[in-house]
Image (cartoon, rainbow, N blue to C red):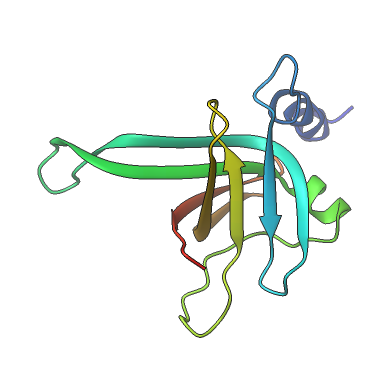
Amino acid sequence: MNLRVQAELDLGEILENKDDGFGWDIIVTDPAGTTETLVGSSGDISQVIDPDTGAVVSGRMAHVSLRISSLAAVGLGIPRGIESENSKPWVIQFLDTAGSTYTFKVIKGNPDRTLGMVSCLLGKYSG
């Protein structure tokens, strides 16, 4: 089997495995309102590095990583940032480990078409 094909299959085991991997339920809503629950990886941290000074500052950096083939399997495209304030964004929801739900909008979608994964930078959403 080709190594790229094998890597994408391995990605499924690592990213979507809720028992032994990083798998975590992530609710994805596209701008048309289609909502699906997928399994991927999520992160939400409160310390970031100021790019101008290099200092550690309090902030918020949330992200998710999803398998592109899983998005396609449920009829969703690749999440991306929607710049227009008049348009609906891609919306992402997930629980933290304490069971609290957080809702974000996609600021930027970074697809890796070699491996078959999209990493999304998330921002505040009060839809």
